[in-house]
Image (cartoon, rainbow, N blue to C red; front, side):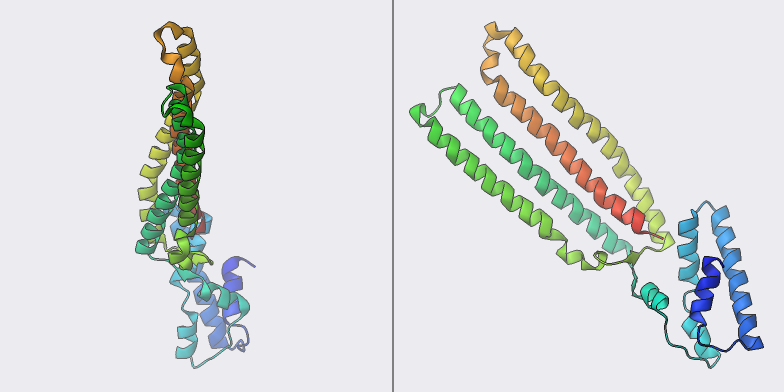
Amino acid sequence: MNIFEEYIANSFSGITDTPEVLQVKQDLLQHMNEKYEELLSAGLSAHEAIGSVIADFGAVDELLIEMGLKVEQTVEQESVQQAEFVTLSNIRAYLETSRKAALLIASGVAIILLGVALELFIEANGLFGGHSDNIFGIVVIIAAAIAVGMFIYGGTSFSEHSELDEDFLIKHETYQIVQKESHQLRKDYQRNLIIGIVTIILAPIYILVAESFSFLGIERNSVSIFLMMIAFGVFILIFNGITMLFISVVNFSSC
């Protein structure tokens, strides 16, 4: 028994198989299989095609009412009906929120590294005289406080998208639009991934170059610049990774 046969069997469970009911079940199965093959020929995956067919033929209850029949819902039917079809505007808002959350979390990590880099710069250049130790503590505490605030706000910003916390479905038309829009985001991801990795690789190379040309005096701030480059690279990688994670959640949840 394939998935469409199971779906029809569940939909008509508890109903006597009269000749009329058997004919309706046979017609439904034929139409669903034809629609499924049509969608496969159009390039959809088996998962997408099944979801689209069930969405199109999902209003079996209305047919039963027209036939003067009534049946209690099975657990499977209730599960399908309770899985919401999320709209395109909901998805766009969700992705925008995910980008903001990624920005906050990535910025929080970068701020901590930049705080340490700033203190090393102050110490290397003798700023604030003998108070550099106190300044170090202040800078690190402030940076950590700001970062923690960003982590918390970024992590809790998804409460407004509670409809995506449970099982949800995306209609085929919406899925196609999301796929098209996320294609550009994937291209940006690949570019930013290269930038982030190259920056992190170049950071220790800068220290070696600075030490090799120590007569120019550039090695004094080499560690600070090293941390700044690491902060930038880590920011790019974290922002990139979190953004793509949420895009993947939307894509894998579609049917």
